[in-house]
Length: 483
Image: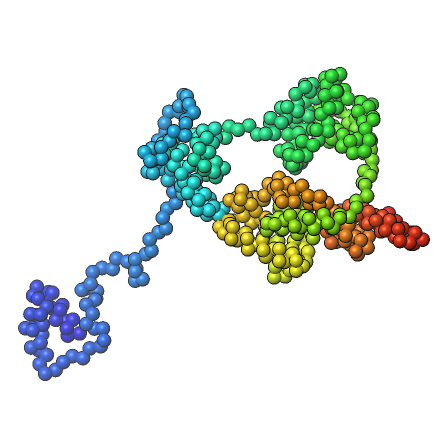
């Protein structure tokens, strides 16, 4: 306290601290000395220290960097003519402008999308180059056409889809491509009468959906139109509108057709006339009351073991072995394999969920899954795709593999195709545990009619097998027929 008092008096008198202490204060101390506690000599206090600028815990943390925003600018006169640009002439060494705000914003969005989708370093670098090419000279009001983007990216071996994804997020891409469905629809409607053109609305609603109608797979529209088009062309020669078609015309079109050809044509016509009746294009459905009939399936036979072994030897990659295991062991359809997620695989509890139904994982399936997951983690360590089966294309996104992926596997050209392997697995289950439809439906999640059909097929195979060994036991093996 004495020393602090000396400093205060020195500051008030304007003298130096040492002189004030020696002349004014130490002489009065004499033989006595004031005791003090630890920390009293710290030169801090209400009057001797500057005013605190921050909180007692120190300066606040710096805020995180503000993410790049869409560049704002003044209004400009829209261009009267917007001629196409040739980005293939862009020189990355001399024409690049890294200070362009649109380029800065695009690189920021590319980084965010790449982190979310697990793009590899090479992909991110390629997208950055592509954005530099198309955004270095970008200004407010400019748009980038897909026809301008495609040749420039292909010339530099850059992924057009990834650059287009970023430009779409920025709202700068104008995709002028005509969907393949539109070209196909134009070809199929060629030759039909104007009054038959409710077919166009039928196909569009089937493809895109509508009120109280869910969208279907494009292959459904293609298949229906393929069956119905010859009949519609014949009706266009004698009728001007779909209302003029009668029940006798439908029966005449079905006359002479048998089996699947008759049923497929009738199903397509029923769908067309039902849609036209629903939308008010016709007043009466001429296909009403015409029965499709029961489809008679042939007797499926078991696969030769040599063909099964040949298919197993042909599957040399982890992906091919995974598909073969899911198809031949768990009888999973290709659609269910495409939709399988990583969350559907529970290795700890040895369960695999296929199409919403949990199935146990045997030791063979466990080894195949471990092999594939290890390969997947090594091949695409940064992917954010949640699906179990991915490839080079789908690893950079979040969707499943394409429908043609299975046609390009190593099982192509084998006698034991994926469909035949799946059927053989279900027949094997029916032959091993008895032709019980309830058991098949519980194991594979089959529709009741499908389970009954497989059970009857297995029962017929057992009867044939026993007849060759003991013809007298045929009636005993048949048992009661399902109702």
